[in-house]
Image (cartoon, rainbow, N blue to C red; front, side):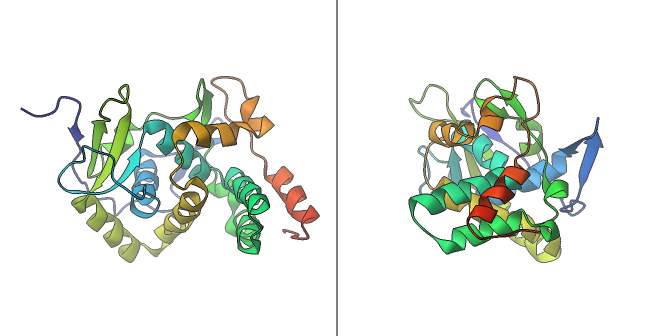
Length: 234
């Protein structure tokens, strides 16, 4: 009998999805379901956990354990300024000029950070957005973690891996997502969602955002921090 908590989502053609496919609603950039699907696909393809959470489906090739972890990673992917801030935090913990340089690069004008940012709403546990609709476009298996209080684990199936590889080959612009997903994987490591959210809430603009409001950007704050480190950004 099929596991009632398992959702096997069909693969669909995503060839119409492009890196700049965002909409503007009430002066706030929002992503389409297709763009959100590509973001999550690239996170699973590039920045998945180092081991599969058990019990894993037979065709699982990658996994992100827990929705809170996935939401935190998606927040960094959608908000280059917060990703840059986290890179700088980690560069302070283990001095690394490469991390500082990456932070400077992703908030530079040539990277079009304002166009690449799709803000998230602040909820009880931090940045959150419903994922089910966009995940339904992918070859992803969603399962309740064993003895983990109903935690949802997200698995990339073999078909989804092939789709990600094909998309990156067919639509070079989507390489932007893969590049950012790699950086998200660097800062997230294998840390659980609770700790990732706590790191994000350490930034007061994030922490003090009222529930159901969009989390404010911090690009100016990041640029000031980079300037103090001798990394001026245009």
